Amino acid sequence: MTKLVLGIENNAIKDGSDICQVTSSPAQDKTQAWTLSAEGEITLKSDPSFVIGFKESWFGNREGAHLHLQKKNGGHQNQKFTVVLPVFKKSEAVKVEQKGVFPEGWFFVKSQAHGLVLTVLETGVIAAEVEATKLDTSNYARQLWKFDNGFLVNKASEMVLDIRGGSIASGATICQYTKKTEDAENQKWGLTVEGSIHPESNKGLALTVKEDETVRSSLYLAERKTCDNKGQCWNFVLPVFKKKQVTTTVKQSFKTAAYPSGWFFIRSHVKGSTTESPYVLTATEKSIELTLLDRENWQSQLWSYSNGQLINYATDLMIDVNCKSFFYYSFLILAN
Image 1 (cartoon, rainbow, N blue to C red):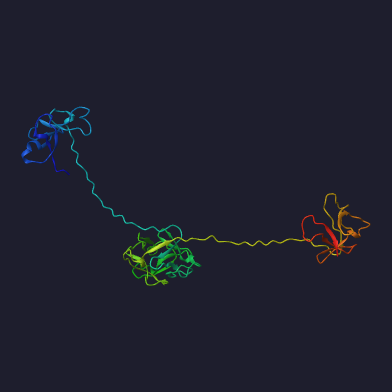
Image 2 (image 1 turned 90 degrees about the vertical axis):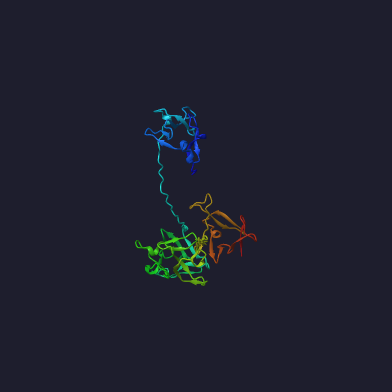
């Protein structure tokens, strides 16, 4: 705001003088006092024949054009003005309070004091106590929580963090309870940017542990202190689940045929061997051959099974392999 007034350059009251801002001076009232006519003309009070206007040209009739003192020309639009009063809206200062944000999914709620985590002591019991204890790697489901529309839900019990008895006051203890559908002020929680967990309806209270307890601490509400109070500040740790290794034992069973008792022929299924004219194992002097069944001299083609050995009827010898090690195409022989 300049606090200057509308005046005439060099105080020269003549047609064409520039209009400018000048310092207010009672001695120069003749060139600084103005009136507004009914037609919208800004008239020099000391000489109503002069008005403020701008030149009628492309350069004079545009934004930023200079104003001049002109002889009054009745009805000329370049000498008429409309006075517009400003409308100032009342400024409203809105205080925006920053809030903390709980992580998504399941997390551990870990105290900044000694690293203890929120734990449900008896997951299957309604109103079971909730304390801060050390992380239990073998039974950590009761220490995992999830934020759901203001509620802190326990993974193991599916119940929520609750202020016992509904008394939202300093000294109240904490338990788990079934989720309420109404009047749930003692089950809804908020978070500050410093990591303080408080009842949603009372930001002056905070979830607190005893700072001198390093192994296990009771959990209660207390008057909220400064942000450097570790007993009222919490971190949120996301669990890292290792992929479970599963060892699968596949039991294989093999079905084996049983040799018949007594004496029998051993028939081959090679091409040309039929039910009427089968090829069978036949013992010669000391070797084994595949020959057609001899319905008259069949003794060398008859076998029996005893203690894992195949014994020939005619020779009373058993089948053996003609080498010290087994491999494909090894010759079969008869041996004692």
